Structure formats: C-alpha cells, structure tokens
Length: 244
Image (cartoon, rainbow, N blue to C red; front, top):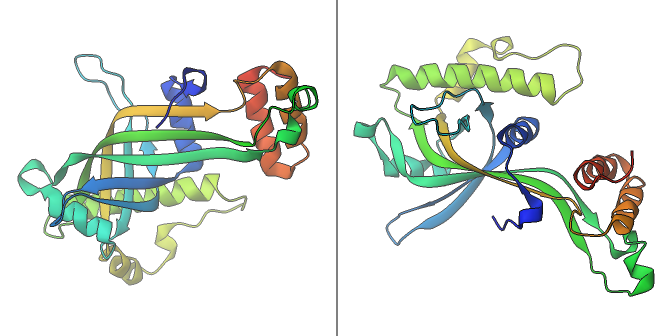
C-alpha cells in the first residue's frame, strides 16, 4: 500500500476497529503454481480476535483473523496445495487481507477556496483502508477434529457478529436455527482460514493534505451527498480538525 506520512495510520486499535466495523475483506494471495505465482483474491467476511497475547519479546499484538471459504474456490485449492501438514497446515507464504471503510468521490467543485482562485484542482477519492499481512493456516482435513471445531466456532462467531452489527433487526438469526443435517452438509463444502497478523498498514486519505478552506468545502459538499457522504464528512472533520 502506498502510504504518504500525512495519510498513514499507526494506531493499532484504530485499525482493528475498522476491520471489525467493515468485516468484509479481500484475501489476496500470490502462491506458486505449475507456471509460477498466480495472484488470486476472494471477498470473505472475517472475525478478528484483537486480544491476542504478545510474545516474550513484547512484539505488538495485532490479532488473529478467521474466515471460511468454499473448497471449490480455486484460491482454496491453491492454499491447500501449498500448506504443509507437518507444520499444522500452515502456508509458508505471506498473504494479505484488504479492508476498505468509508469512501467517497471528491469533486473539484468542493474546493471552494482554491478552485475560484487558481482553478488548479483535480478530482480525487477519499477512503479508509487497512491491509493485514501474515501467514494462513487452513482447516480442511476432515480427518482432523481441529477442522470441525474451527468451523463450528467460526460459523457461530461470524453469524453472531454479523447479526448484531450488520442488521437492525430486534432478534438475531443463529446457526442452530437451521436444520443440523443441512448445516453439516454445507460445512462439508468449506474450509477454515486463520491468519495471525504479523503487520498492519492503515491509510486514512481524508483531505488532510489540503488547506483548511478547501477542507471545509469538502465537508460541506459531502454533507449534501446523503448518508455515505455524511459518513466521510465526519471522518474528514476528525482527521482535518474542520468544523465542530
């Protein structure tokens, strides 16, 4: 990720909070194949354990990401092919999960100070993004109890997280609401993915680089763009210290 200092986020809890808010992240891998590395990606909803303990050397605890994906997915097949059973089905290649939060197009018309003075303005895009890097451990072998245990835990936690954070319904759906035989059949077609995060990169590109007058124009313009624009405007205010 290209990180200008003015846009770079270093605070781990802030980056973890975006991951938990967004949930849907893109798993990106470049694993070796018969003809060389192949770039693959899949959108997956993730659960973050952000209370991972630190090692003895006091390295930062970035957390652990967990998800599941279809065994029929070519990316899943590539992960299985690269995993080492003797190492607990760990894939010894770095993977990345990319999360994107609030975003909005920024028209030059929002720059109410510079546009009328010089006209030297161009369109851009404001966005929040976090990239998590680490090595993936997969749970696909039906001969190992760890696979069933992982999938049971993952499906329950993911469902609870999504039902409480992504809907406004008064009651939450649970995995146990579906027939057991149906759930077991579906579980046979998926595998678990676990990534202990080794580094995090955060980027909040929210008009920090422009002058206060133009930032105020951006905030004012975004506030007229509906719920999505208002959400970005609030971040611009927080990052650029514009307005109340």
